[in-house]
Length: 184
Image (cartoon, rainbow, N blue to C red; front, side):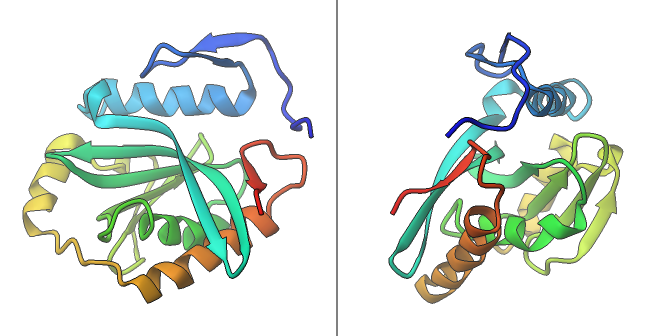
């Protein structure tokens, strides 16, 4: 099924150099990547774009992309999920994603629509900042990692979080969205 995005041509990914479809959403993702490097002090090697994730809800499975995983000192320290529109509606599924991307709780969870961003504490789920300028810089993340618990996610918790992601991102996703799909 074709996606609903207007394809404007191709553009080079800022992080990998890979050629991608030039869409309005992809332009926002590229803006985020440039911001993380230019303004927040991350290296391109710290930023991992377009991370595929498989989630299961009972016998159903789906695939989606996590826009960015940011790694510092060999640990995933932050996930960033982009989506147009309201940020608040993305809190719960993005927190669930942060409990599935690694075997531990990722400390920083960012939801963004490309114009604004909300930063959540991964452990508590509480809002700790709003606005692009509040996305933690690399230096802040390094300091926070010294105190982070990196709580192990139990198998039961992972199963429940996967169901949340499936409900929001796969079942609740736009049927013409080509970044998330049912696979079983």
